[in-house]
Image (cartoon, rainbow, N blue to C red; front, side, top):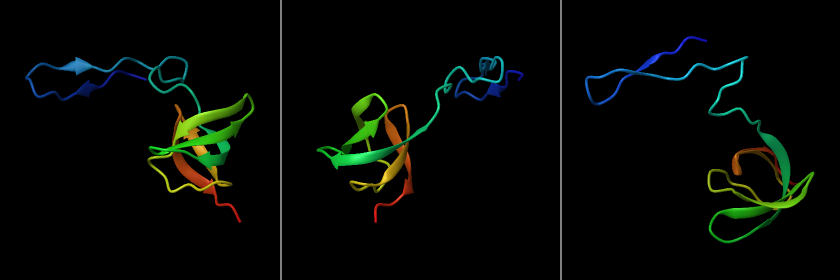
Length: 84
């Protein structure tokens, strides 16, 4: 992938770093589907992961306990399955 120019408010141009071996250096981790165990204060939730319970943000989605959410960098980015 070739670097691209990013417009700035100043007249200088800056390039974005190349991605190497098909992996972007700014977002190389993957999103993971996890089940919401409970909602807590301030837009957070406890979810079940392979490593045990973990706290994530659900501020961007409308998730409820039992829902499966797609999580990237501790942020739920989509509800992929609603609880029945």
